[in-house]
Length: 498
Ligand code: SF4
Image 1 (cartoon, rainbow, N blue to C red):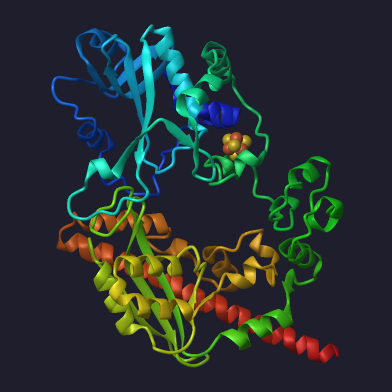
Image 2 (image 1 turned 60 degrees about the vertical axis):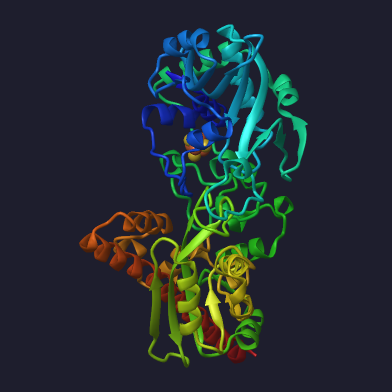
């Protein structure tokens, strides 16, 4: 049995669809769905007994029968050929047609959803279920929780979908009209592809757009560090590879955007030691910006789809942990401070951090704009009484990812990446894989478990969480010192050659 999500996979990439049907991978959400959207929408739409509610494996007959018996159907499953669809809400009108409601756990469901809605409509039409109007129910980005969740403020019933700028300027029904199509042909092609023994892997932008495809490693061998495929911000790299150019050293300059990062990559590939290092830029970055004591700081947080506590909006985060390594002087023994809270620990987190972070010196973070700085600014909105102190902490932050993201430092082993996990393996022997928790999402999952664990389990989880977060700040120490060593070495070479 196919679902609409299988059609999406098929149209994204035939190999992806084929692999998913033969070797499905488990999808793990990055955010916590801490409420049940169906139950919230029942309240919003004032759905009262009696109504029909479908189950996951319904084969379609039950919902078809319920159409004549009930005026409201919730999560009804309908089957056309070998395609099963689920309609979140169908509400019968006086003329016996139905208003159809699609639900979205996002604040701005995009116009791209219209194709999926049109495909659902195709199935309803084939089953001769008349549709009156189509609505989208989505989250209200402006909603701020105070007290109990208010579904009438939290959720919006909309007749529009949103463009990439989150603007609503086209009605769902108009968009659906333009997307309507005959699904029979698509289903025929899907069956054919599913049955073949092998589907060729063809690298396209789909393989790495947004999140990297979960089958990427199955489809392609890891390219060599200096492969053209590792060029960053390059729209022409696939074209170059198809034309037979494999290595950055042979790159067609006319096909490059000519960014600083690309320049650094090509220069590192050409250098005997595989390193590009802008000594003057790095001298200035270190000497103009960084003062001791250095506070290496890292946070862990959970993202909630529905605001769980007062003052929070949809998709707000709750920062539950920090690790702080303090280096008072260059090379001095490190001091370590940490915090780990449970449930609504936002204010305790702020107070602990402010009490323990040194009052002077640089606060070193990795990717601060999208992470630590953003988290503190969000906390300062929720707890304005700490705003001044939190802003002062942000003002002292320096982003350790900057030397790499700007292309001032590039080592060929980076292979186009500059995550902290990647960098620490280049600058040291440390490996996150040695820890019980080795990914940010593992940390979040473990934190979720803390709320339901007994004392013994809690102690073990806390220990693993402390180790993981401390590893991040220690990794920053290693990477920063790696930069200092390179600066030292390159500066000496500069003077000895002049
Ligand atoms: S890596 Fe690319 S070719 Fe392979 S399944 Fe994913 S999208 Fe398709």
